[in-house]
Image (cartoon, rainbow, N blue to C red; front, side):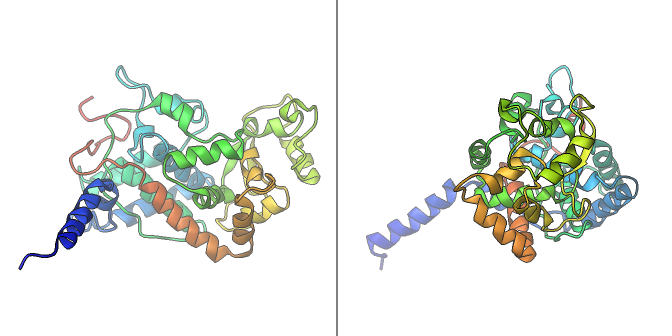
Length: 331
């Protein structure tokens, strides 16, 4: 006996819906290299651990590489490609030039992984694994990274110039940039919490210290004691490349102090402080929650990192597995 028409229609509708959903997300999984490179996580972790010995900033730098990669054409390691006759490198885009770092460590990871499992693990997956390792080795949460991304054959410098959130932007603009890649307000606040470690150059926040928005005065949302400290690090006509800690309290530890800093008007970047100081913003409640509950922050951060890692990956037979993260195979 054939099923009633409504049932068969429903079955077909479910199948069609399944076909319409982005397949790429479904193809990423935590056991992607279980047979082909079972030790990949520990290989990455060991190289990151070594890098930390000589560079306390490296964890923050590696997570930022993953973030700046995923926001431009998805998590495809396009950010790692050098300039060539056919490629305008994302490394030279405004948000990255003289700022993004950690490429040498990525190369060291790639070499170690290639020695163990040649031609198997993508540079895009290495960035995702290195980000997790950086967080977990700094006191933050650990999680099972979803894997199976492949590497792009091209870069998008113009996209890097327009798609990556800027420290000078208002909350509405930043929210729009997150929304454009499928991330919501909770993702925005949770991922901003990565500024619980790492450094920023004076040029990324000195606009707040002396003449904010052409008022002739500092940013009124900046704690005055903190302002004095920052003015000493970044004198008015000093070096724009001098460094300040993004988290003045526990500068190299991954914790929820970033959110308490925002409540105390001690966010370093304009884009940080606006999460708490924008009147009526939906972000304020989330900041308060994360400040009072580190477990809630860690859980949200893990989910948001997974969400970000799912942005438009190349899977299946798309792209390639680069043998050198800096260049397309055969170039």
